[in-house]
Image (cartoon, rainbow, N blue to C red; front, side, top):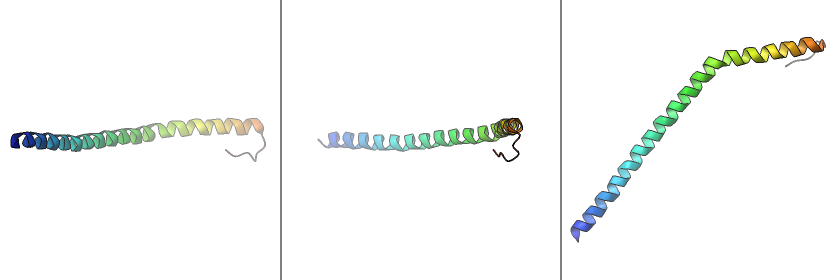
Length: 70
């Protein structure tokens, strides 16, 4: 009977250790994804900004109003 309780206790402790490892793994995964997003924003930011500025310039020049802002 004591052996049975010992096995149950060991099984429960093993599950708790796996939960902690899973949390660490998920944390590392989220940190990696966040770093990838930051790199992509810094790499593509000037390209997207240039596209918006070009579109704004062409819209402003087509209207010839002089007061239009983007």
